[in-house]
Image 1 (cartoon, rainbow, N blue to C red):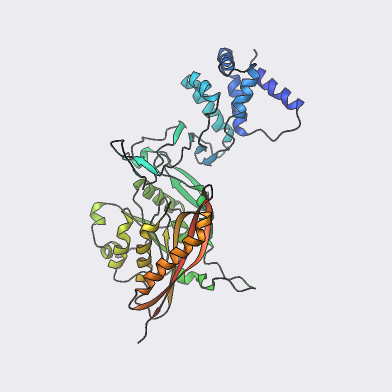
Image 2: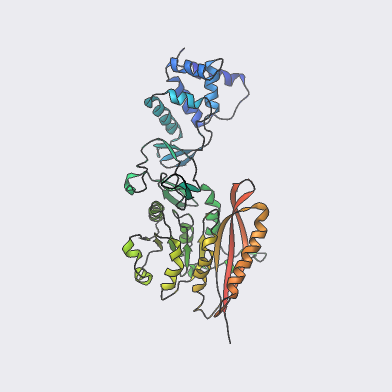
Length: 427
C-alpha cells in the first residue's frame, strides 16, 4: 500500500460521480492524516469495522466525521457526539497520543486563518440543568449554568477546579452584533441562540418609522433619556444582554453569582470599551448600597451575589434610579424574581410628578400551544400587583411575546415584555 492510496481512491470516486459539494475542511484534514498512519493500523481498522475494503472503512470515517463546528477564538468547538459514530471510537482507541494529537492539529490547521491561528479543540457536551451534589446520590439545580461536560481534545484549557485562578484558564471570545463576549469554556456557558434577543434589545428604542403609526410608540426613548436611565439585569452571566443595554447608553446594574461569569463580563466590558466596576468581596458586599454607589461613575456595576438582594439594594439608595428595563434571563423560568423585578421598576416611579414607564423582560420555556394562556396568566399576575399600589396608579400590559428559539420539540424560549406605567394619584 502506497502513502497516497487513500487520496487516489477518493479522487477516482470523484471522477466517477456527478460533481459534489465542496469537501468540508474537517474532511480535508482527515484525508492526509489517514495517509500518515501505519498500514498495519489501517488494515486493523478494516478488520474491526467489518468492511470489505480499506477504502470503504476510510470513506466511512470521512462520512461520519463532524460536519459542523463553531469558532470562538482561539478555540474550535465541535458538536456533541462528534467522533462517537462507528468506526471512530475503534480507531481513536488504537492510536498513540502523538497520532491522536496529529489529527486534532490537522483539523485546527484546516480551520485556521493566517492572521488568527486556532490552537484549542473541544467537543460541546451541553449545559446540564442539574448537577450532582457532593454525595453523588442527589442532584440540584445548576444555578451557575456550569458546562460540566465540555470535552477538551487539544490545547491547555486550564485546571477543572472552579477555585483555580482566572489567569490559569483558557479564555475565548466571539463578536455578535458588533459586541465582544468573553468567557472561560471550562467554567461558563455561551449560548449562540441569544443573538436574536440581543439584536432586538439593541433596536428597542429605534426612531419611530415614517408612515403607519407604530404599535407601541412609547417604546421610542431619545438617547438623552436613556443616558440618564438604568437597566437592571438579574441574571447577568457573561454580559449577554448587559452589553446591549450599555450600547444604548443606559447605565446597568447587574447581579451574577458565578465568579467566572463575572470575570467574563468584566473582560467583555473592557473589550467593548465600557467602564465597569465589580463588587465581589464579602467586606464590600456587606456595606450599605448607598456607600458602595457613592461617587460611582462606571457605566456597568456588577454585584457578585444572589439577585435576592437586588430590590433591597436599590431601595437603599437615597435617589432611586430611573429604571427603564429589568432583564430576567433565566431558563426554564425566571418567575421567582418577577415580583422583585416589578418592585425594582416601580421604585423609581413613586417620587415622580409625571407619568413613567419601563419594561420587564421575562424569559421562560413555554409549550407553543400554551403561549397565549401563559401570557394571560402573567397579565393577571401583574394586574394584581398593580392594584395594591397606594400612592400611584400602576398599569401593566404584556405588550409583546418574543419567540427567541426552540428549546425542545414544540417548546420555545420566549420573552414576555411587560410594560409597566404609572401616573400620580390626585385627591
